[in-house]
Length: 324
Image (cartoon, rainbow, N blue to C red):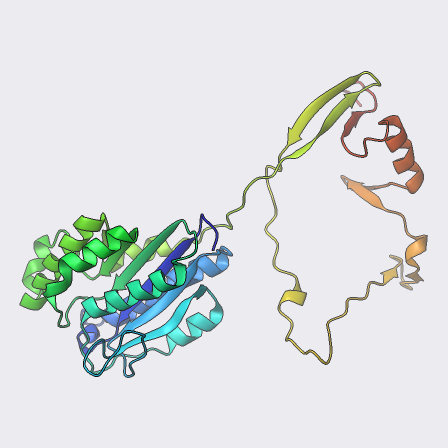
């Protein structure tokens, strides 16, 4: 994993309490799923190298490395830490609410284990656990200091996305159950200890809907600007605007070892008969406005000769009046 990439474990609560919601509005589970899907989509479309894990809290099945006969039950590691993909989105779309109430604190511990186990020998920019829940389930409040210390020692951060502001309940207090208030106080102390952050669904979704462009590091083209035979100025050139192109179709073709993908190039004249032309009969050309300017082997040899064999660079061939 690259040093500037992020490892993220998304915890999605699907317990029966997540079926709550305003009249004629989406349930808490629907909003939580939308946030999780947007987090993954955002990384797919920006061609991000971040790795993401998805942990289901309150799942029908139990699938995690910490489970025993009576501990860490109904927690499913739906996707281990891996690069984001459309397969991950497909799995997430099939997730439904269940009748199993799960301790979200246990789910946080499982998510921490998933990230630490996969990244312990790797360098990554940051590691983060994101909990999507209305905090309406049961929880064990005896592990608060252990979790906070473990996250700080492992350099992990925590983000909570909830229907209400966990760190500032305010006017929402009247709508919350006693259990939710207690959970908000509990999780708020962990956030404070690890310098984590919290958002409401209404705050998170607009931010996640704006997709990022692919992050690239600008690479200079280093060469010389030559003016006549005696003046050579070192320059570094950068591309200011780059067209974002879709990936070539060859990267998406179905893998069939018995029939490998083969690319054939055929050249035709731009005329009514579309006469086929051999490659040896073609000449490289560059477009200058609407005009195609041929660049033959003789032209290349002449330029290389004038540059003394340097092979690359910019050359001032002459000057002309502005009116031209």
